[in-house]
Each structure stands twice: as C-alpha cells, then as structure tokens.
Length: 256
Image (cartoon, rainbow, N blue to C red):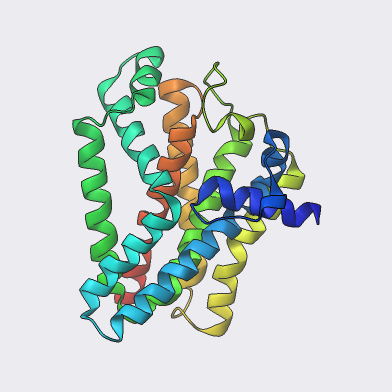
C-alpha cells in the first residue's frame, strides 16, 4: 500500500489526473516517489497514443496528431513545457547564475521561451506525423524514457536554488539508488517490450533510452557550466529535449 500511495503521489504531482483522497500529500514521500516518474510518463504516453488511434479512425492523421498532443498537455497541465520555456528564457537572457535563476523564476514568458515552445511543438508534430502508425508505440516508450532522463539528472547533479518556494524542492534532496535505479528500469522496460514485440522496427525502440541518456548527459553538462546544477524548470526542459530528440532519432532510424 505504501508503494501504491507513492505512485499516486507521483501521479498527482506530475499530472492533473485526480487521485484518491486517502493518498494525501507528503513532501518526504514525494522524494521516495521519484522511482515512479517514468511510470507516470508511460501512462501519459499510453493515453496520448489511445487518443491518437481513436481520433485517426474518424479524422485525418495530422488532426489526430494535434489532438493527441493536446491530450498530453491537458493531462500534465503543460508542466514540462513550462519548464522548457522558463529555462530558455533564463539561459537565453541571463549571463550570471543569479540572473539566470531570477529570470527562470519569473512567470512571464519572454522571447526565448516563446521560440522554444513554438519549435518544440512544431518538431513534435512533424515527427509524430512522419512516424505514422509507429507513433502509437513511440508515444508511451518515449514518454517513459524521457522522464527517466530527468531522473538521471536529479541523481547525478545538485539542486541549485536555495529557497523552499519551488515545487521541485521536495524531490531535490538527493536520490538514493533505491529511487533512481527502479526509475531507470521503469524507463527502459517499455522500450524493451516494444523491441521484443516488434512494435518498432529493428533496434529503433532500444535506441530511445540511449538517446534520452545522451540528452541528459549533454544537458547536465551545459547546466553545470551555466548554473552549477539543476532547477525544477531544468528538469522539465530535460524531459522535453529528450522526448523531442527521441522522436527525431526514431524518424531517422525508421526512414533508413
């Protein structure tokens, strides 16, 4: 029951999906619930894939792709997209660490954030459109693996904000192996299943976790150079960067 409660805490934190009242809220348990973040991503991706399939039965494919994207946004409340926009504004408009962090915390969107969102949505749409029916398998696989990428960032870097006002603070107190190892496994299993079942051609499915790991490493290296660690916004940006990169890798592999 404790692990079920932790899963629901993770679900309630990262999505707008209602959770049972008995789950309650605990900052300490949220830290322990990090292992289930990729499973939350798997659920979001599976629902987005179901929406894509259902819409494609009665609507043109491109419209179905847009409705699928809208479904995932409604489920998460654009949680990660907000982090991408804030990170782009902060890292694009700030020079010193304090300036970057101050801009990231500003709720108003700037030029860099708007451009980042525009390009992110355009790349997602184009990639999912190009993948065709393979997008139905790609969505849950990529959503799970991209959240595991953010988890790796949390496990390998330090949190750089000193205040307690951010939503990311409860999960920024350091991760033990008992948290990040199961999370990494949950991020890998959907890709392994897609490969074993042949839902994605050849080794394309197995390339997704590798791509997401590379994105986490490169993004983490950049963050370390700019601000010396990560923020909650940077985690959202990591998920988005990994997700988009994985779609592009799948497009390249399935096209070859």
